[in-house]
Amino acid sequence: MASEIRYPRVLLKVSGEALMGSQGFGIDVAVADRIASDIAEAHRLGVQVSVVVGGGNIFRGVAVASKGGDRVTGDHMGMLGTVINALALRTSLIKMGVDTIVLSAIAMPEICESFSQRSALAHQAAGRVVIFAGGTGNPFFTTDSAGALRAAEMGAAALFKGTQVDGIYSADPKKHPDAVRYDTLTHDEVLQKGLAVMDVAAVALSRENDIPIVVFSIHEKGEFAKILSGGGRATIVTE
Figure 1 (cartoon, rainbow, N blue to C red):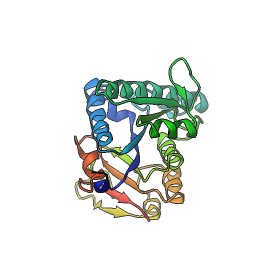
Figure 2: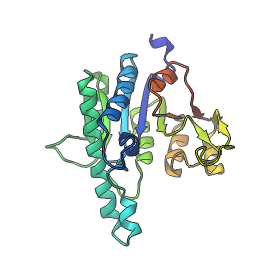
Figure 3: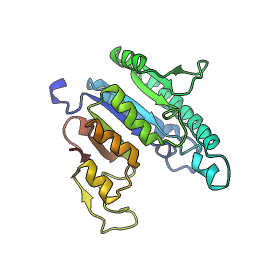
């Protein structure tokens, strides 16, 4: 089975918005369970999976800045939202019998362990799914950047970005039916074309560390495992 796997160690970036489903706010437990089932399926294939989860379903730091507030405080509030989401996703994985640990970039020992590369690699080597919370622990950095950073630190073979659509398009296909879908791109092409699949820092960090970015629909059940096994539908960004 292991020889069939295209990417044996991956980092999955899940947005906070993905966890709220059709709700306008918060966490839809059924959706969290469904995403967790896809992670569990990949874990059963023997893939080492780590996850960075966003917090946009709960709070966005830029919302504070846009109304004249302090961006640093806003980003700290957003980081706390990612911890809530990480704990929810861990709960769903534990229900499915998958040993899972949450590591936070912000120290909160009563709730979860603090992140270090050494402990993250040790947990992964022990067969656990590792969920990273708290972003990078620094304001002004998105959870996309956190995903690229953690992927590099974990030695991931690919950074998976779960989105609302099945790859990267020249424009939003929900608003522009004639948008062109790309099967493959280079990191430089993503930056030059201004394709807003991830922020510039995340794409550049992935490029510098030679990490492919795999963009797929987080809402297609089983798609994560299909792509890991060499099938499925996605856009692959690579050099």
